[in-house]
Amino acid sequence: MTAPAARPGTVRPGAARPRTARLGPGRRLAAYAALARVQARTQRVYRTDFLFGAIGLLLQIYLLRLVWTAVYPDSGSAAGAGREIPLDTQLAYVSLASVQAWLANSDARSLATVQLRIREGAVALDLVRPVRFTAQLIAARAGATLAMLPFAGCALVFSVLAGGSQAPASAPALLVYAASLVPAYTCALLLGVIVGLISFWTLELDGFYSVYLMTAHFFSGALVPLWFMPDWLADLARLLPFQAMVHVPTALYLGRIGGTGAVLQALAVQCGWAVALWLLLRLVWARALRRVVVQGG
Image 1 (spheres, rainbow, N blue to C red):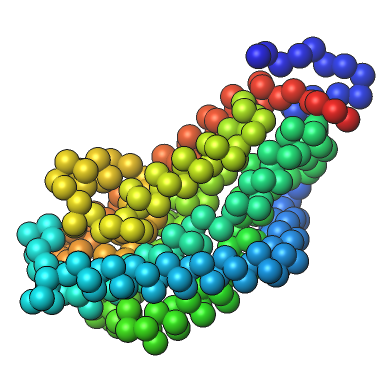
Image 2 (tube, rainbow, N blue to C red):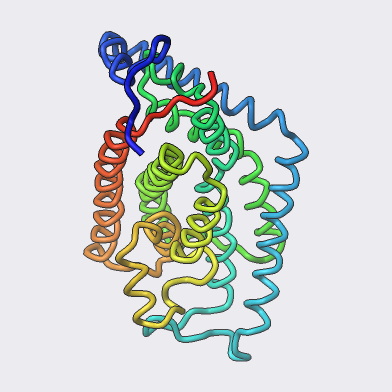
């Protein structure tokens, strides 16, 4: 399906670019912050849905603890990637990884809004705003994540009380973990926006997003760490960007990635994926602009 010829009242996508270029850096940052605040407030409006999402996360952490405790050897440690993984370390991994994965995929409502606006034609108004459409999506996702941070903190407290968490391997490990969260969240943010842009082709996103969420959850190591996967499956996971979102930060926190060289390599992989996904986003957006079809209004 190709883009139709412009009709009276139809806004050309390119019209948004000159207005965006006239915004100074300060006003542009203020616009991003305002969009993030609006999305955060939108997330908090649906308190019941929010509450059940947090309860679901806590239930997942608790059930994973039960499962891993049941399947672990009586010795209290299992071999993974050539090293012994104590049960306490594994429980800490699944607790922290579950919270990170929950935050990384906290944009279901914002993606639903994107596909609705595209399907109804309201996206035409988004395209002529003085902030780029992709920047609007990024700011909205960031706002959704900020709204969920307090609940993530409660989940971490719960995991500590349930015995499924532990202190970082060392002070440097904690610093490296904090640094790795930046490219990890950047990768999750960009992937979510790319998935949202698929609406320009499909108009509906629910089925595609379900497949994406399942794939990302598994290959990120949120359910099963890469060190317990078969070699061929772990190698496949390392070729995908998902492991940079959850597995790498958690493994750094627990000291399972040791040595200066290995740590720097892990951070470089994360940053490399962040840059690659940014370039992919620009490519997908350039293609999506050619597919704009305004329906309804």
